[in-house]
Image (tube, rainbow, N blue to C red; front, top):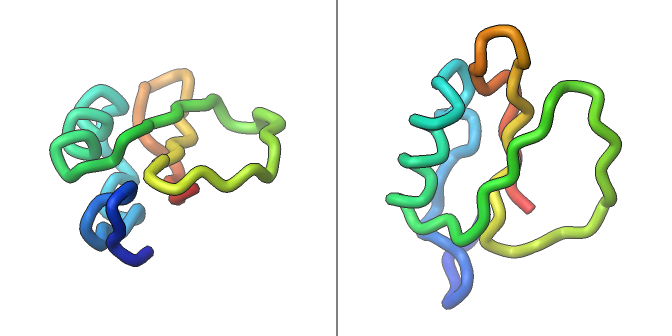
Length: 71
């Protein structure tokens, strides 16, 4: 990811994996992500890319981030 007026400074989405979803969202917003989307595993999503958005796949049972990606 590259920095621009609408996206945060470079940030590796992998750093959020394993975190509690609320903590992951707090950290992402503190690092400049303008949108954070959390979805349960297996959710069907559109392929629409949105600059500045960080996506979290959150395990329902324990509320932890299982996967993270930008867009």
